[in-house]
Length: 375
Image (tube, rainbow, N blue to C red; front, side):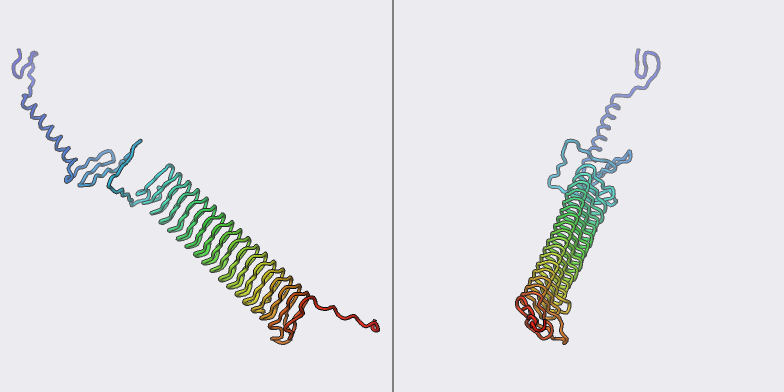
């Protein structure tokens, strides 16, 4: 027999009325709906935490802290939205594309390609492999094993080139070095720009050493002083203010505003002097000119002098000219102005000394034979 509150074995166990059970079910349903509404509401705030991570929703912002969002074989699609990423400690705020990058010492930076390294704030490594952007706001674009370490410097393309100076640029080529502030190397191989705002373009083992110097192509050329220029050729030098060397080999413009053009082993040493073509010729004097020939020389005091072609000709007096020939000379006489405006045209072994403004043209006559009576 079973009565209310009794069982067959005689033990008394309380039983819950049906209306109580129904009421509890309704109450659980209400609580569930309230939780869902709290999470979906834009005006409310809710959070969960546990296991070292937290989820927080407040207003229009949902915060997931201590967790990584991973998407496999899918896509993150933003429509009519912005993607904003920033960090306040090293290793954060970075956008990383590609495998094997190192960015633990970077902040708010961009890294793409493969096996690249970013160090510093707001740096960029865009493509390439084994490149390094280190410092403040440095950039490396493509290439292999390039580096930009000067603040606001850039290395673009090429192989093993470095931009280490402030605002410097190493673009293309191989093993180039842009060392000084605002210096640049463009193409070529093993080139160096070590002067302030110096530029080395193309060529091989060329050096732009002076401030504002420029080397364009060639091999092992060197613009050593401020505002110097070397264009083409090989083993050429511009070693004085505003000096220029163009083409040829082993030439040097070593006077201020001097110019050496073409030829081999020629030297424009005087201020404003010019040596064009020829071999082993030298212009020492102010505004002097040597064109062509072999081993022609204008002395230091022969201002405005000139030698045009010929071999082993010499001018030592101002305003004097030797035009061709062999071993012709215009030299100083006893008085100061004796040989000024001297002139030799052609011939061999001609000499202007003293007040002889014009010397022989052509081979000088042979000395007369001695009378037979004196023999």
